[in-house]
Length: 172
Image (cartoon, rainbow, N blue to C red; front, top):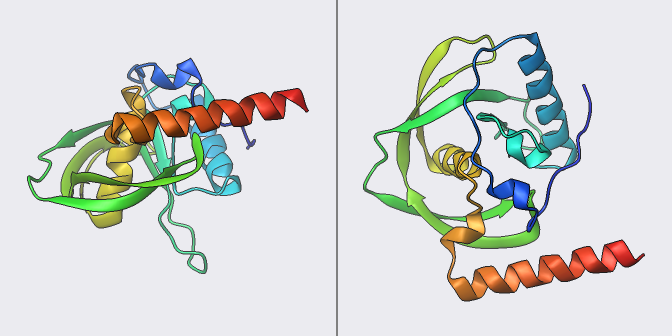
């Protein structure tokens, strides 16, 4: 397993639409293991493959609390089915938009069909933080960042600050 660099906005690769995975094999499982290790190291609760420069439809997550045993989840080719009309508001952050947090409204519940770590088809009913996290990570697969759900003013302000920070770091 290896910790991979995480792309940060405004990197244009984050805007790529990810392609479906043909099959779950040892190579893909190794990538998912790297993604999980990268996510834990960051630290975060979810990571899409595109965030480490791999434009494929793969997500890893772990919503376990700080003193709880790890509960990794792997989603290959996830597809949202039946999002609820009821919505919920969560404060979201993103490893690709570091140090910024804003409230985003999303469907409160959803059903997700996906292939698991072994390549078996699964269906998961999600609500609360799990539903929010799945939707957030699936946005990445479409080239969408959580800041795209904000007003243009807030989004532009965040992107300006990120660009300024990247210029500052590059100058060091």
